[in-house]
Amino acid sequence: MAHPDLRSFFTRELSRGRLIALDCLVAAVYAATLVAFALSDSGGATPALPAWLRSAIAVTIAAPVAVRRLWPVPVFAVVFVMSVVSTALNVLDEPFLAAAYALYPVAVSAPRWFRVPTPAIAVVSAFCLFVGALALPPSVAAGNVGLVVFGTAALGGAWTIGRAVAERRAYAGQRAEQRAEQAVAEERLRIARELHDIVTHGMGLIAVKASVANHVLAVRPQEAHDALRVIEATSRTSLAEMRNMLALLRSETGADEVGPLPGLGRLPELVETATAAGVEVDLSVRGAERLPDGVGVSVYRIVQEALTNVAKHAGPARCRVSVEATDREVRIDVVDDGAGASTRGGAAGESGGHGLVGMRERVAMFGGVFAAGPRPDGGFAVSACLPYQPVRVSG
Image 1 (spheres, rainbow, N blue to C red):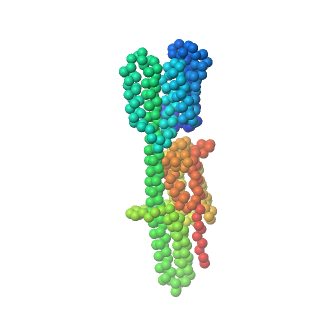
Image 2: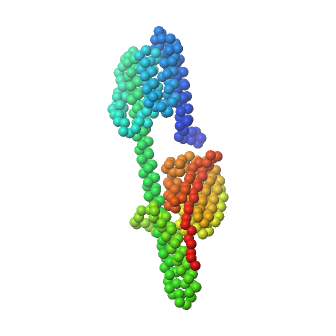
Image 3: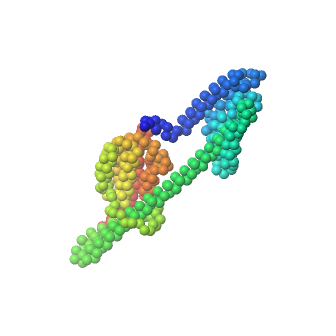
């Protein structure tokens, strides 16, 4: 069985800087190889050409591929022209491998509207490879005719592979967008279900208190006054939460009823669950006793999803959860020191994580600010700030 570190090395995505460094290494090795062949008798070089010129041609063929990712088209043009010059002057028996290597990023980065008959190119490449390997006599295959045939196969193969990769990436991008849109729709449906519970709870409480006030108004006016104050506070809270939610939600039908909504009082349960999963959690909650129900639910869900991500992606780690509320906003910070930050999404959800999408939607519901990403000193951080309108009760 392969070591986990080796599997990680071969499967992880290389950064752009590392890919350019790899191209530089390939260019240096190939340039040294071509120079050695150009200066030797086995390279097929024309003796009339001076050694420095043969070496310069060899270096000009190989060296530009070091920056093929930065300037794909100019690099390919230079390498291809110098390969043709080398073949015409009989400097090198180089079957356009450097040109094919430079053509690949051109094919990958070419816009989709750039119409080239890639299937026909693939057929021609396969045919040239077949002819060069099986049909040409060895004496012809070793000459310029063979170089042209094998060079055509190499160039056509590089273009075909590059376009296939580009199409695959485009398809993967479309699928990622579809998954993100689906995740948003599902999250909004879940929020709509919670809205159903909030409205049901608020209207039920208002109905009960209104009935009480109606029966005791004449005999116990103070009790009726207290009931009216509860009705006022509940109605204001429900209206504020509904305005926030309905700004983003479209009407959904057929939503199933859910159980009682969780709130800040159940945060210790999340801590216990995360601890059982190997995450050491330090929980701090300040000033959040009088948050509206809808805000409390969103705070709970954000912390829940953040801790779930830590348990799933960071492995054994330490995590700090801070919930601090004022009379105008509540701030949530979930910071861990675990590994696996790159698997939880770059710019807050672009890598496809539905949990980050859901958290962002909940924060957007209140017009708040959300941020998530790797920390400079390691680990991952989730930060959210949810403003809310405090409920003022007269009397």
